[in-house]
Amino acid sequence: MTTSDTTRSPATASAAVSTEPDMTDLFPVETPNLDRLRSRLAQTAADRGLVDVAYRTLDTPIGPLLLAATTTGLVRVAFEREDFDTVLAQLAAKVSPRIVAAPGPLDAVATQLEEYFAGTRHAFDLPLDHALSSGFRQEVQRFLPHIGYGRTLTYKEVAAQVGNPTAVRAVGTACATNPLPVVVPCHRVLRSDGGLGGYLGGLEAKTTLLDLERAA
Image (tube, rainbow, N blue to C red; front, side, top):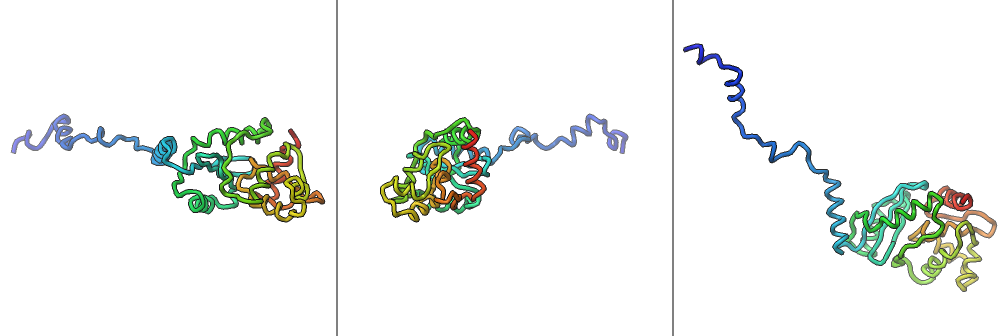
């Protein structure tokens, strides 16, 4: 056995090690972000009209909000305490199972809410979908935006305004089941004694919204 049989130069050794094909072109170091890919696919589906309900979340001073819209308009605003998964399941059952996370259709909603919480917007200019309400509840909810920014009415006064002065309890139920809180301002309805009454987002959230409007 000669020396050349047992000893290789560094170049020869390197060549011997590199016998497998270079796969770096087939498998890049940077792998796709699956969440980003899902978001793009969902947005594309929404843009092409393949989605009946689009949704996204938005961080606000009263906690995260879930925003959902149909092709008609904003159909749901939900507080975190309602449990977003439950809300989405309800939307799938009551509106359409073709529901997907797609922020694009809700950009205008998010922008107007951000302006509202910044104190620069006093009224919302958004198409609304009242599909989740009917009858007297929807009648009350359609009236609520007529309560001016920074103003309040009592449940009794709202009942009188919608033409049914004895339906005070029903007005309370309409406010408590309002599917579009903040945008449809049920927080502006108080008890006759000045008490806050109930609020789907919690009394702390109701107080925050009232204080925000009084300070503007």
